[in-house]
Length: 195
Length: 239
Image 1 (spheres, chains in turn blue, green):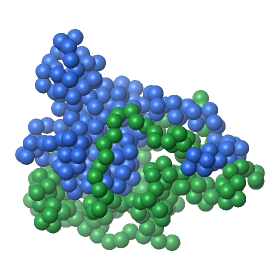
Image 2 (cartoon, chains in turn brown, purple):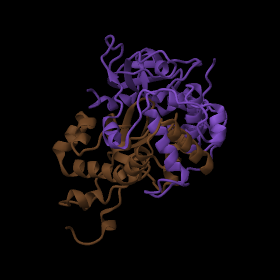
Image 3 (cartoon, chains in turn orange, red):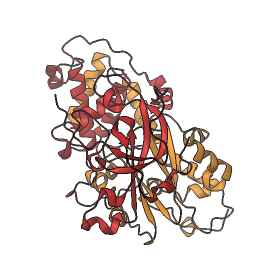
Image 4 (cartoon, rainbow over the protein chains, first blue to last red):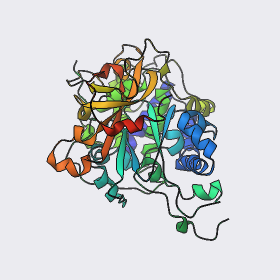
């Protein structure tokens, strides 16, 4: 595969269809600038700022753009909020649709057949494979991203984080907690007294 | 030519466990970032749209055996060949043997940030009034679809509730098959787990499960009103 992709790149550059510097810029973007820390900042702000949370509910695309995250694969954002009654989970059964501006590129499992096949049929069994066990009474709500709407899960704020700064809160937000296959880290995991 | 998708996996059996992966593990081979970048850069050339790409990927005969970026590269080669941008002889040789064809644009490094930030919004002026409203019961198309579609098989012929209306969006089925954008109203339709998975084996999970898809108006027809507790989802989804 390595040789094949290298040969294809050589061919497309020789043809003048692609600029090799643009390839480097694209890779650098998703390696350094666009990843799940962006989404963690969105979640932390929603936890800390009720007015922002309300704007997320009304127009998530616009609210997320306030933090500078927008564009490709996040053109039409919807944020879904976990509650004690309902746990949200996001999947793309047809391919790999994923909110790139806030989460970056999808992990391998998200694109894999097991997750795409099973998330809509036995999500609790899938969650168990991520080490997540929900209370029996919690309803599981799965969002299959079949068009250009992209979903971000707003997990529940961990207990014991009153008064925490957004930055400190963001440290508790995992990628998987924003897909719905995980939960945020507990406050104790952050260590130390409140900043 | 009939289009067969091998990518419509929702609810299918026999795939084994999900294997979690730590955050930050972006690549699993040195060629993967190059495959991603080549696909994005050629996508920006304007020679095809994202729905053409999805159609090319999902109909690859080896889809289920290939890794995800292998699928991307195979589909990229297919689109390049179909559009006459490269010859089979060039793909085999790994170098240019013929003059290039003109392309609409070449993405330059300095444009990358702006092009990604702009993205490709799919909302369009509505061609007509929406046929359905939040809270309506709808039934999905039950038959086969002979072209690229975004209506998964596991929800076909099922009754659900409209929980959001997103305005009119580029219609993937048309856009993938050269019929233009044909904007159609787009809805989020939620289904009770029991409606999707009536088998006894799924009963334990299905009872407390709701699954939604985003569905364009041509996929839907009105259904008789019935019970269903998915109405709770309707709150706050309205634009």
